[in-house]
Image (tube, rainbow, N blue to C red; front, top):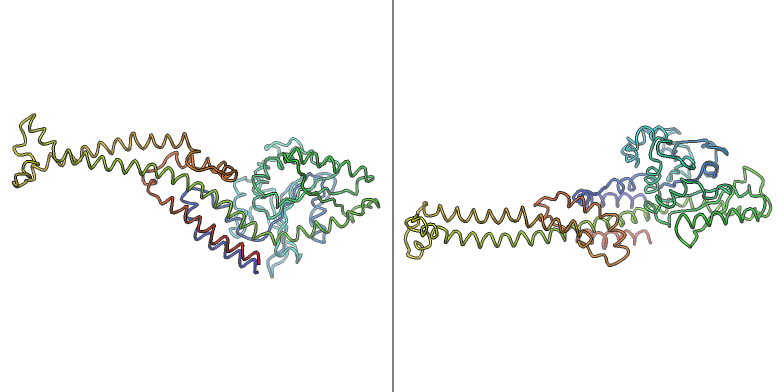
Length: 450
């Protein structure tokens, strides 16, 4: 399977078939567009002394990132290979966020302070020709948004959405106790990345004096992870060290193979790209479908009111057309010949005889239209807003979780709806999404399964 060709095919089909629907419901298509661009991405997170840069240098086979026990780098650094025929280079953040070929346009919104701490290093390493690793500033305790100058948590969230694999690294001395680490694992990553794309690493185990010291650090990390994730089950934790940094006690050398396995997991991230794309497309389509479904419920109720109003307008208008001039004649003696008697007697009907009937028809139909626009539809809209959860069937946990993500979007669409919005083909859009999910998506899954 040619993964790049398949990625391009998915990108073209998603853009052609789905982008109009995202625009119709004012949903953000940028996340999906960013994911469909460029190459596989691995995001490396951790506190400032967890060994992130050392491990990345080892992957590269050369010294690219600065390393040290204290914070040495306050930038997000994208490391990848240059394009064929190009040389090594370092690009500033301003170039990255303004290059439409790259998936970093969304980061422009984080401002100049972030852009000054964002860069790309292109290094001639064959393993990185179809892979990019993002090194991140070390997480710290009690850091406010003002201290960094940009919204660090939001930046992490966007990078995690983009990444095919997220690696969280800890060291034995601060095994998960950093405040920003807690916030990231507890609040940020669950919104942005599936658990199957997370790797947990306890690095620098060579700094443990003995096996008992290692077990204490490992147990501390397990406890902290259980508190941060809110789960009883502890994910797999890779135990690693860098052979180039120091001498390893004999009883800890057994974990040398873990580091090679971790490298293999990271380098295999390229194989996760298509699956990640399809998961993201599926997730956003499920959200889009629920929004369309909710708007369809609103529109069905609104169209029913419009249909009833049209019926009442015709009935009342016809009654007015036939009988109002007769009532006026009985009260005021004009016109000389009302319309209905003239028709019954087979007499000719002149323009003046139609003036009162037509005026009565228009007036009564207009009153019904005013009632519809001023009373009936606003009442229906108010009921939909107040009972917004009743617009969709929430019969599974999955649908309830999806609804929580898009409920606000539906509320925004109902904040200022137009009459024409009642006649948008919401049900047809739901069917179009279902066809894409059941047909196109399943075909792509079959292709990656071959």
